[in-house]
Image (cartoon, rainbow, N blue to C red; front, side, top):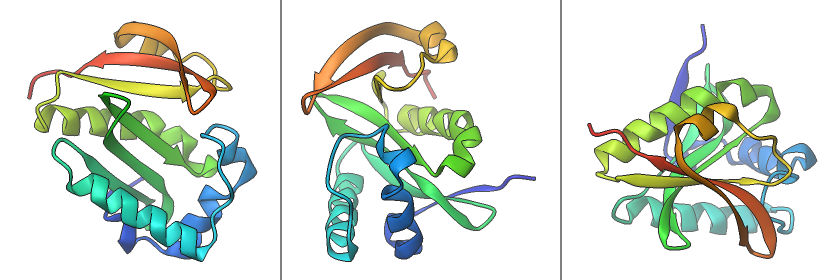
Length: 155
C-alpha cells in the first residue's frame, strides 16, 4: 500500500532532495536553471519556506512510504495561484493523487481558481483538459507552457 505523506521541505533529507532536483529526467520538465549544490538548495528551500508562510500558499515535501519523492505547492506567481508538483520519476504514478490533495488545499485556502503550468515538453493531460475552465499556451522565463486554469470546488 502506498502511503503519501506531506511534510515541511526542511524536514526532508536534503541530499535526497538535491539528487531529485538535479536529475536530468526531472530537469527537462522544469524551468531552465543551474544544477543545485548544497548552498543553492538551502537558499531555494528558504525561499519556498517564505512562500509557504504567505497568505494563500502552501509548500510541502512529499514522502512515499518514508522515501523522499519530491515536493509540491500552491504559490502566487505571475498574478495567479499556481500549483507546482515535482516528483522523482519513480513516483510519477502518484501525481494524480498529489494533484487531488492540492485541490483540497486550494479549497481550504479559499481559492476559486488555480493554474497549473506544464512545460510544453509534457504531453497533454486529458483529465486536466476535461476539468479546466481554460487551456492556453503561456510563456514564462522565455519558455513555453501549456496552462490549465482550474476551478476549485468549494469546501
